[in-house]
Image (cartoon, rainbow, N blue to C red):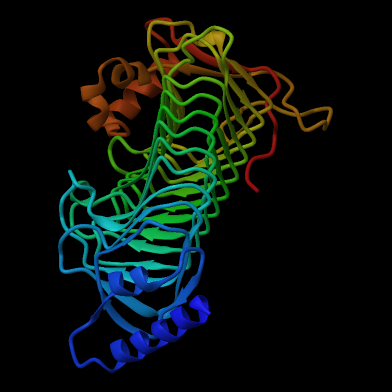
Length: 407
């Protein structure tokens, strides 16, 4: 009887709210009336935020419910486990980076945030101390012309074991993953932003089958060990310091089967911090970049195997005081390989070796990069190769170069 009485009261209140002549109804009123663990299917229309959910609840909008904030704070805040937010349109957050104003701020476990539209918000979805949750199929846009003034599209902080998948994200600052190990980022599309993925102290993360287009940098990882970066398509990261994938102070990373096209640097990496660790680059298509692979401070630890280097202005650049020959190169396809395959086994008859001739000028003096590919530099490079007046530096030796490039 008490349950039937509650449902009757809830229905009467809902009817009164729908017939009210006031402005947009408060979403908090609807949330407060819902029983813990229930499903609240909101009638189509506009509701005023903010709203705070502190109990298990499913909130559904069917793509026809807009929750509009007044330009202050966060639209929806979750402080509970087992909460689902589905089919909502969230707009009008505040502008405070310090307060992380945005569309959704969530803390809990086993949350499901899917098929929502977040527009005209500063930050998109922030997960703080959230575990075993899913963020799927959302459309997220930040505000602001300069990427540094925007908020993060998705932000993870001390959050573990979550799946971020199939989201459409554009015009944001970054996807920031901080102190958040063992999360999976699969099938997302991220465009026209600063850093598509920005990982800090987030070990054993999986970044797989994402499309990252026209961002300043595709994936950057700092102090994040045990990464698996697989099957991503990274294109047009052409800022002066931009890169498709950048790894710094990161160990035991696998970068495999990615397509990295038209970036300032296809891959940038320093050496692993520990001698036993390895950075493995396997089966990647690295094409039409200014520099294909850029290694700095080389102290070994790089394994570059079965990659395809095609139409890069400089396939490889290595800078530092270490010995580049401490790295391992094998089975890569080079479009500038000058050997033959007389036994037709698909492997070049002699190793592919890359020497630094006039390249050393801009490698050792970064200020001269402006003159790369200029007629003077091309002439110097030609003369160095024709009759070297100093011993060129051997950058790499691939013992078994593959003969075929391209897909």
